[in-house]
Length: 392
Image 1 (cartoon, helix red, strand yellow):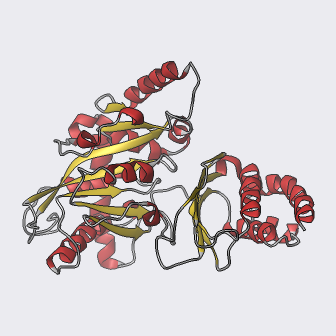
Image 2: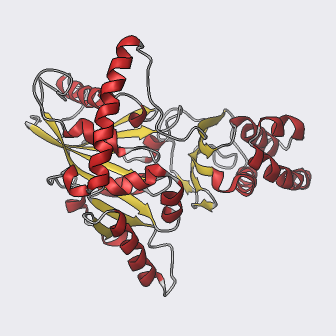
Image 3: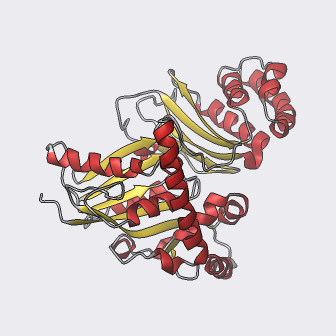
């Protein structure tokens, strides 16, 4: 297909576990949706989110590990250029719309800045001098009504995601049957309007995809003084990073707290589902709110050819989803963890101990654990030994 002269780009943001992949799947499953390119950005070294997104003849899925907002914003330009190159070379179908599914820890400011500059045809500000013009056509932010308030209170990224949105979608509204829910949602909407007075607030159950990802005039000036200030700061940081990059090509900026850690666990052999859920339960009880996110794909002993998709956010665990087949050729279990102030080694040691019913070295584990996590871990590991013996 012929590429249009202007291609709208939508940012899909929302804190960890807010339901971005679920909403994106629902959108792409709509029979009226065509010619949409999807860029998936993950905060981690092992990509798994692309396995959760529908693949179709008219959908391009490009996975980018590492956080786009932590590197020079030319990364998003390069990704868009790669998509165009794939079309020109006949490696992918053309597209008329791009959706960028941001990392749950992603800061929208650098991407909004990168996509809001005028196309000049020359210089650093040109998004693509020899192709269609990409323009920012909307920022859709998901807000989890169960965990969202705590996320905004404890994580600056979640607050900025709300502030930059021109559409806020309330998710997980179907998980509560309380008669108080309508009132609670209204109160929550009022609190969100205090953070962002210009955004439309939509219940996920009533979301109209035809308008959610339809081009519209997105103007940062409509989002309030805080957003304008953050974008001005972003421009200054970008110019400073440019000067540093000329002196050090490996320069980069981390926008997340120094305690935020992401790591992965990969297992070559199928797992016992019972032991995996025991591991996850022990990890949640030990880490508490320091466990920001767990997601992944699991090869189970009972049905190794039908993998399980697992999600957990802090103390909330979604029901596992069993796929009819593996979405790719990799049959290994792949788990991604995002944690606050917890070293990876005690988590890996706990995983091995539970999955293999192996003895646990408390000294070795707690030596590397964060102080808060270590004390909680000591309380739960005695249960681990007892449960492991029962399963043998």
